[in-house]
Length: 438
Image (cartoon, rainbow, N blue to C red):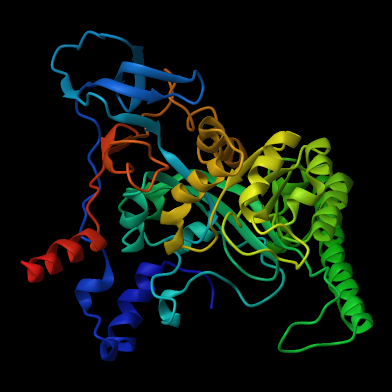
């Protein structure tokens, strides 16, 4: 089954497939209406502004005009007809960016008809995750309410998985949501561990041979795609292979490579491939990235670190290694972003950044890991990721420190100057059932 619009999947299949589970037509999409285009100037006053680019500015105003940040400073003059919002003492942040997840591609994990994440073969570089994005997903508003304005979604699978897209999280459909298309080619790197699985233990030699076979197969795919590219450049292709045609931009250097890998050996193998084809490489996962942080920095490899929570992977690791890794990457000079791969758990990414502060990152570094660093990896640092004049007015207001469980309370959000409805199903159910306690 090709990736398709999940909203169509739900409309055709969810009603009949899960009626017995108690889901109704009302559960097919959230009822929050996307914000309208900015109608006039908006002046936000009295804020603690976390600019990312120019430090933290206290008691500062921000002017928004035509969907962009027009001015930043103290005691700004409101333009004629401006909507002045006194937000004294509250904290203003750039819209947070969640990378490498499947938000909007899965609605209910247990219901196959609502899972549009992957294809069945090993060679799907022509697959675009964007066409399966469900802008009406009930999960999206819950993620927004924790401060996230953008998400980079990717198609799952084995080996050549497909291409990702950066989406803004307040839209009518996937076309409206696209902020940057084709942000990278995603590859699920073959296993490098020589230990068989717990459920299917095998001798180390057998596992090693299997790993080598899969790696050889992946390298062969790239060789075939490169031959197609060379023939295309020479005008010798007389037919079109949609798989390799989708990789033309990869070999021309316009499509970055995102390799999903946790083991240090996998990452080292991926660096060799990236060097061979002279392409930009980002590691997605990176559980063991702390072991080779200096190598990653020396090769200008970025990391989307998706394991900020968790137990040690090995018996001889420090108990808090997962929490300490962001600080190790920071110290080595690696450009990294924090992420929680999946979909619904993306809402907790903001607290993962807060946890990293307890284990070595400064608050400013943690903020960069979910703003400007993420924007650089997605190729949108010119318009997103910091509060600067001329950038998109994608902004978040929190009552206090956005990374702190207690003071975190997102009260306002704008995406390109459009005010976003922060209501969601979780809040609705909370407000409904708390009445039973009265």
